[in-house]
Length: 163
Ligand SMILES: [Zn+2]
Image 1 (cartoon, rainbow, N blue to C red):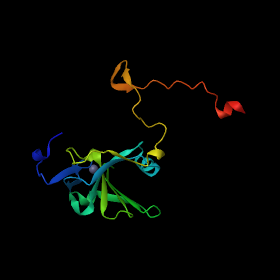
Image 2: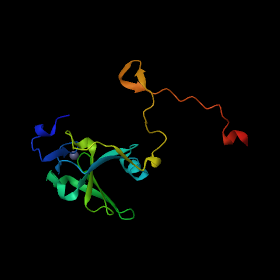
Image 3: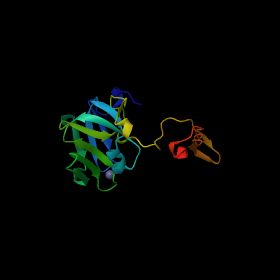
Image 4: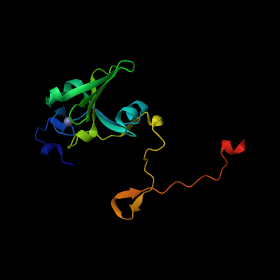
């Protein structure tokens, strides 16, 4: 990870969507970074969790490609999710309840943002299929794939067995 002094603009850290049309930056350091395990994020992103960088809105700016930015608005939840219309990358997630903050997927930054994702939001909503650090090993014949052995079944009878 490059140190802050090697950034092209030490004050700002740049990120971009998957296809690179949309470029944005936040002022260094970010406010915080966290893993979002919420069911709302899972169903919209299709992932077990998303890692976000939270920035003050006034320290976030779109540098290029504003015209490629679209949004999905959920009035009921008071949430706006912005994404690239070309590649579909999520670019920002904003909550009415936190009008001064913008949340940006951590994976869109190549450089350090000044905050490590040490927080877990709505961990209890995470799915039972999420990877949580179980032991994994190589899968024969597939060098880029690691494999998690199935969990051993409990010997304790379940409620279904009792009735
Ligand atoms: Zn894009």
